[in-house]
Length: 83
Image (cartoon, rainbow, N blue to C red; front, side, top):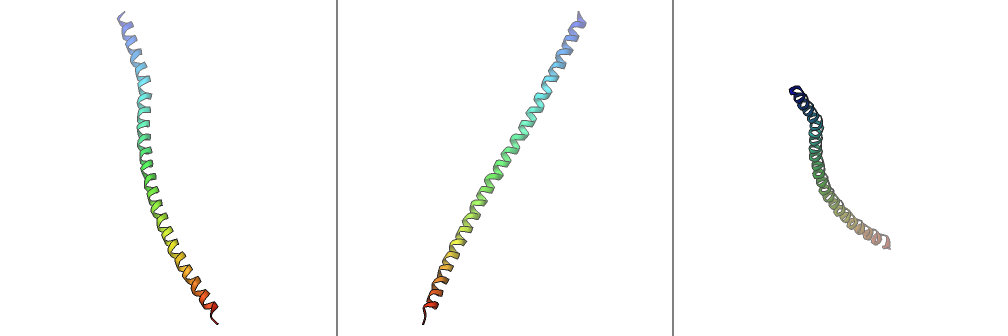
């Protein structure tokens, strides 16, 4: 009878190890993935801010060039309309 109890305890311990190991592995993987996703979200937010700043600068430069082109257009019109 004592050997039956020892065998049953060994079987339960083995079963517990078989169940716990994948759970621990899965928990570790989920934790690592969570950290990676958070870092990707932060990098994406930073990229969006940099992109907005870059777009703002590009549009400002575009407006500046539009003004210069308009000025050149007016000057060319005046030169062409001279007798």
